[in-house]
Length: 288
Image 1 (cartoon, one colour):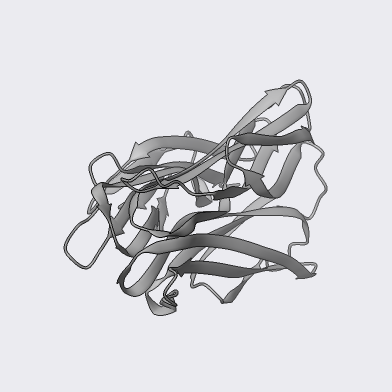
Image 2: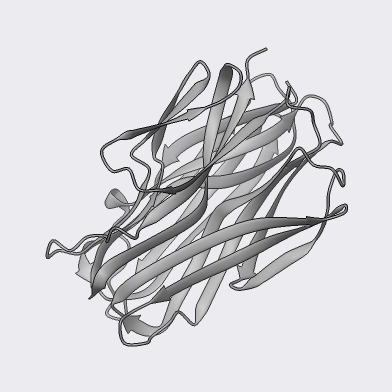
């Protein structure tokens, strides 16, 4: 069992523990499947931020503190009870494996890439980046029209690069002056016996379940947010914003995603437009 996965539902300001039982964690990375930031009533937005602070307190556990912020310029801040996150952890356990790279990079400026990152091979069976946090901020508080988060991965020989993009804007030309992304990376040169992945792009499936099919039966799976875009028809205050996939089940060869989507709303009934969506990476661990 060289690779293991865990996930947990939590809220900003809380610390969660990923327990790998009797398995020793040798390397790991963390990411977001889902996030939600809310006020207790709708307001302008100055800052939107989520970050994950991981730590390894002992050989078999990883802890992660979830930090979340939404605020305006009038003292309105996050309503924790209506804010949440689904946090995932991927780990190499028990036996060191030079064919697997798990790493995290924080604070990548929008429109740039981080690298080079030394890869396990120039011929990867899998290479994928995913979102583990972000920071977006106007110079002063404004309405929100749209918000976009995107991460990608490029390889050049044995060097890898994580691409990042992030933006927030209103209808008056105001753009986020702070725009950064945190990302995790999974890169392997394993054969397909150790770990599988399937990318599902441009999902907006409110109220429905999306099946993700794998080639083999799975013992476990995690879902990781790679791209996110949400948009009002025109700009408004924000009561709650977020998205991804909050829940899923593993049933044999199939991972069933519950209502993957991006959302935004105010207190006047305005919600996300049809151009909103999320793109997800589903990482599956085969049964042995």
